[in-house]
Length: 213
Image (cartoon, rainbow, N blue to C red):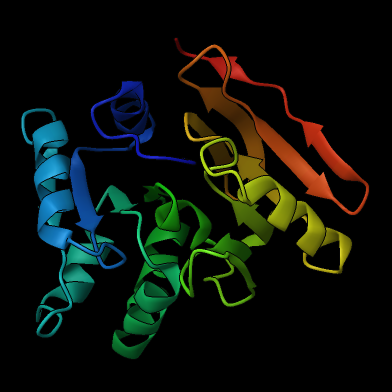
């Protein structure tokens, strides 16, 4: 999901796609994790079986059970590079892959969108934006969130791809890209204007959108 989705129609979408009610929220990227935890529980406490995982001051003893027992693993926005570093130190990256291969739904917004890809456009290193080729690699190519929400996203991403960065997908703030396995099967927008784009060396191509307005 390209931008902040909690409290919107995308809550319904996540629950519809999930195989069950057990949701594991991962606020590792967030600057203020307690705040996004409140938002998450406000959105799902009465509709699912939510839990969360923190790596500060250390990961829980039952980390493996938490991850592999989840029907949904939901990652917040924030600093993607920092989150990836923490996850790898504690082996969370391998557990997430195992959960995904076992049928768990992986989702998130902003950092929680791009972390699943091989590469991404990120503000992890500063507001100027940069290309990062260090994602979890569950999905091939690159991704960019906030395509309509931040003025520098489009020019930075298209220039990076023209200069040899892996091609990929860009999502506006009110748009979600749905993958089954590694195949893009739908693009869903919760406004009449939002969209998503395939970005290649030849430019950007609008993708067909299903609207849930």
